[in-house]
Image 1: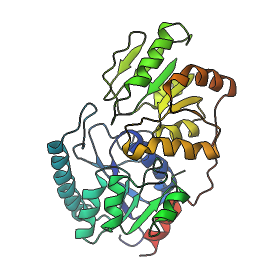
Image 2: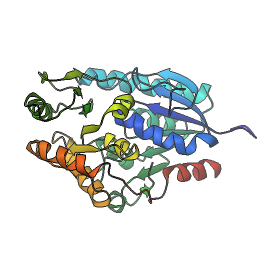
Image 3: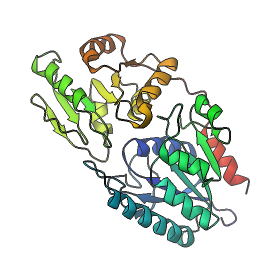
Image 4: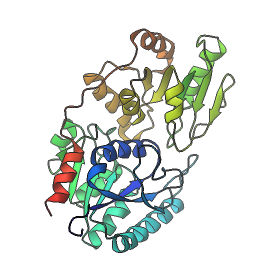
Length: 166
Length: 151
């Protein structure tokens, strides 16, 4: 971050409920940041209502709306990891922020390998158990800060913090 | 218009079948539009689509929304839209049931694990109007701002 400029946050727009939760967070923080986005094809467009303007890099989805496959997931993982590493360098990212989605794992792995700070927020739909994505990030300590949105979940995972998008 | 959304990651045919039957029996009294995601069920009494980037306009136009137990529930609470929710039991660890149960502790939402309760819950929600949710947990936005400023 250069002096007198806003920090740059790398945000993932993966679609569906995750994009909605991300929009709730963006509403809270948009005045203090500039944004760069990784987005799936239908994840959302910077500049549309609820998504502040910013540079957009497309990444594949881990699943289509009609099916899931391991090959597709592996492809999405590798491409998201490589894109994140490149974007961290070229866009001078200050912090990576991801809510819930599968893309968080390769993004935060890339962040850790380049010493970029990061925040992971577990989806608001997870009340008492972490998602597979959340478990991986929590136990491998892939994010600098790990937030959950329900007190019950925070009690169960003491290294997490309570922080809601609402 | 009644809008049904079941998300994009898991099928929820039993919910679609139930609402389609109610529409076929003339019990809804308004048109039906369903976002069906990975479900296989084909509606006989309404329009359907797999998914699209935003469903906010359909939520806005609907008089009542029927939703799976995903983050859409929060979207509906924020939008103050009357809705009925059913957890999709295919969710990992049945997390949609835990989520709706927890939301129901702080909000008077209409929900059930049994889709055969749909007609009754639609009537209940039409009478009650929109549910609300308090927002008194620490804010993630504040934590992120302080974290980045503290470098």
